Amino acid sequence: MTIPEFQRHKRDKKKLIVVTAYDALFTRIVEQAGIEAILVGDSLGVVVQGKSNTLSVTMDDMLYHTKLVAGAAQRAIVIGDMPFMSYQASHEDALRNAGRFLQAGAQAIKLEGGAVVVDRVAAMTSIGIPVMGHLGMAPQSVHRYGGYKVQGRESDHALVLLNDAKALEAAGVFAIVLEAIPAELAKTITEQVAIPTIGIGAGPHCDGQVLVLYDLLGLFDEFVPKFVRPYAHLKADALQALRRYKEEVEQGKFPGDSESYH
Ligand code: KIV
Image 1 (tube, protein in one colour):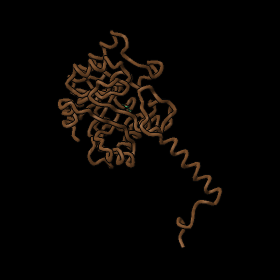
Image 2 (cartoon, helix red, strand yellow):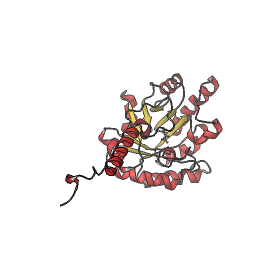
Image 3 (spheres, protein in one colour):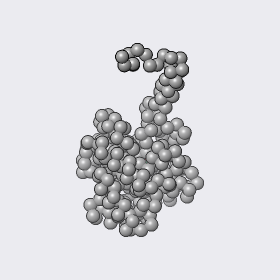
Image 4 (cartoon, helix red, strand yellow):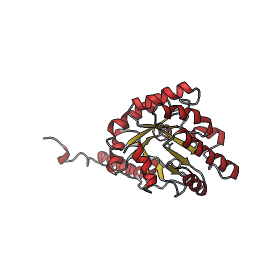
């Protein structure tokens, strides 16, 4: 998968499938499932690092995980998520940090925000860095919203988001993530921009969907938003396996003869 191929999916009316991954093991599994776009999301702050939000994730954290994913990916495009304060403070920081993701093996970066980041995005795309936008519920602004809340329900805010999407498109983003916005607004945005929209909690009309891998697999159950559908229950399976292992060691049933050397 290349960035132009990713974009062609919209023209060809083929749904784009994106998941997050943070390490080599899951990257290989994701690729074996035929998924060709991987986001190294700053959601790792929550699902890997155990924090309550993504704000403490650093560039070093993101580059480490990006290297693991990019090192294992053979076909998928790898998109590195710019963490909080890696692009907000200055133009120069933003450009340099975006470049570091590409040096770590990512093909593209993602950043959150609309009109306020348009200049940064234009500077990145002008030097050849593919950028994915992220509108709607932007997790790095969680404190401003007062929690993880659906965005764009009122018509004036919906209009701001539509204009943000158009401004990001004009600045050269190759796709936009739409997170936690009404399905009708996501449909309008999807119809009014030529670039793919990738929804998460944005209904079925987007050009593609993205989910956090550990949510999709039922591994992370501390906070399950309405838009998540767990396609497996790996936490329950892991618990069952670990409890059986403990029990069988305690009862002298493991290891058995076939698991022993002679
Ligand atoms: O960090 C992340 O995983 C994300 C996706 C939820 C879009 O931004």
